[in-house]
Length: 290
Ligand code: 7PM
Image (cartoon, rainbow, N blue to C red):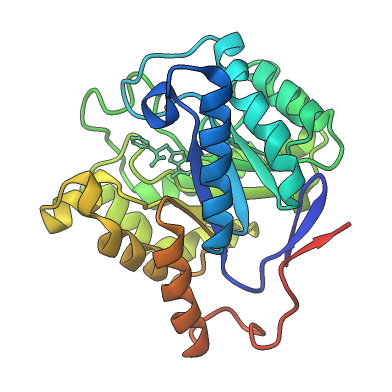
């Protein structure tokens, strides 16, 4: 199985690691914008040295209750980083829910759109469809970013509801002209879900494979791991690695992580133990240039 993206066809017969690059003032600010971009690019280089397969570049925090950032400000943050990162020769993902940002990022050379809103904003489907090879990650979120955790979300069957939502968004994307091979799906851990919902999505994750699309999952440093371990966000590396392995074990193709080195080490051992997807031994290196 491959994920078709703008410049790369990504081989998913081996576990893939997407490294998170947050380009928000709280992450890389040194007061100047060029400085911010070069600090973010240095972070990209570090994640690649640690073994990241894909870089996910985001300029707006999608965390529950976060203040929205205007599109022009988001573009001022991400475009210089995107331009610089093109030279790394790896698949680049833009983490945004704004159609204008998607278009500008794809025009600049981004390979993938990672949308926590699953292309639900007006114009988002068209923005991705108009780039004939761009990849997309469609994520489930209960409600809107500002409100999703405001009150405890209710589901009759969280796995069935997430699967039905993702099936609907895949159908909408394909109806808009986005070929199935360009699409991966994501259960959206922590987005309008309680600890128990998130764990149910992990335990029954294999049910989401019936959608017929590769799964991308993000457990990295999330609050469910804090609830399980009692640890603050900066002490969740081991918990995050364990969650990433568990997700891979249940059929995830790609894990979205902050701690690339630790995750890659763990996946090497997991893979060597024969626990990886079928056909991993001797598989060619993943992202083959088109
Ligand atoms: C606070 C809470 C800060 C959550 C940041 C986050 C995902 C994503 C994010 C995910 C995909 C984070 C999240 N999470 N995109 N963007 N899947 N596809 O941990 O799970 O970065 S934001």
